[in-house]
Length: 356
Ligand code: CP
Image (cartoon, rainbow, N blue to C red):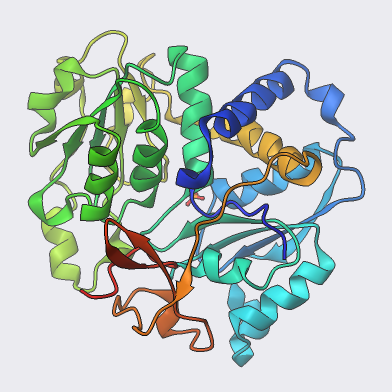
């Protein structure tokens, strides 16, 4: 099995993150130099959940590097519709492709898939859990637009509970000196405790806020996120949350001139369209940076012997994870892998406590 998988950005060192940024900048400067960098290589994009940017930017990235792509954007058009397990699908695809990019609505699926892949595998989003390549997109954007990855005051606003982009971004930025965070959400959609644990482990300052208008004035970066209808069991709960935080001109007037607005997209209505022309609104440019970040990542994963992302020590647990959103519930053959954190036993797939 390969150990070149990217499941969680937390496992990347700052040197590896910066290697991606540096390579992405080089590609942006002279894309023609990279036109044949991955000649003959095949990327499989296995998208069990809808996507515009992640899937197509990965495909475009491989095409621009001279490689080719296979895959599906609707698992019901594959043998998944006939009941094929994740293990069997990945075992087969990793014989066809040189690298796999996978998105799935169930938490921990990318980690589970990596157990059966013979080729590097990239997590493109696993339920409300993690989205490491969105974070690399965000990091490339910050490096290009703010000129630094440290000493930033970052406001994160919206669905911080289910927002996998937020969880991954906090994990990455917490590695850098003197970054601080303002966590702007309703109490119902506040960040999970394991993310707070990470902030505390790194000694990062953070504030909890329930008001975008009150918090916006002092930020270097505002990271807006969508309230994710698909993560709610009850439509009534979604309706109660959906319009609580909307960035409009009135609120933006309170922000600094050098604050930048990021959003992983898609947007629904949490940023009014009249803000799109404001020079601080960088969310469309951010998606463009993402493609270069993904070109860099594909190259490093396929070609750089030293670009090996560390794996955690884990063991087989006596306990089965009780998180109803964890992949262990649907792919029953999976080993009950766990790791230890602060004396607690955690699920290797979804990062929830096993004794909860
Ligand atoms: N940011 C992001 O993941 O967008 P898509 O869902 O369109 O891929």
